Length: 103
Image 1: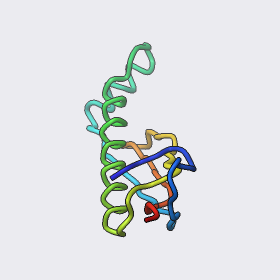
Image 2 (image 1 turned 120 degrees about the vertical axis):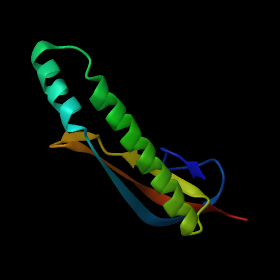
Image 3 (image 1 turned 135 degrees about the horizontal axis):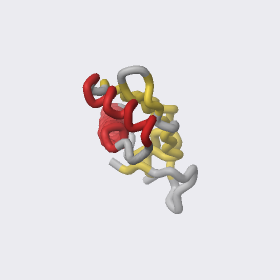
């Protein structure tokens, strides 16, 4: 399954419908408290970084599966909304148009 951030490809395609997926991953409350303390003192918030990375992987895997289930060769114009740390977790929304190669 191909994922492309550009809105065009060098080969002929038929653009399909808009596909959207979301991923909301829960944070560990103990680690969440530690990150809030780190926010006061400064430094890398590695727990949130890994939480965002994990949630993004889940969202991209869901997008590939959704496009494949609908019979598309890939997704074009793939956009990842900025990940947000929300109360108790991370939220990511990914969207783009399914496409099929012509011929």
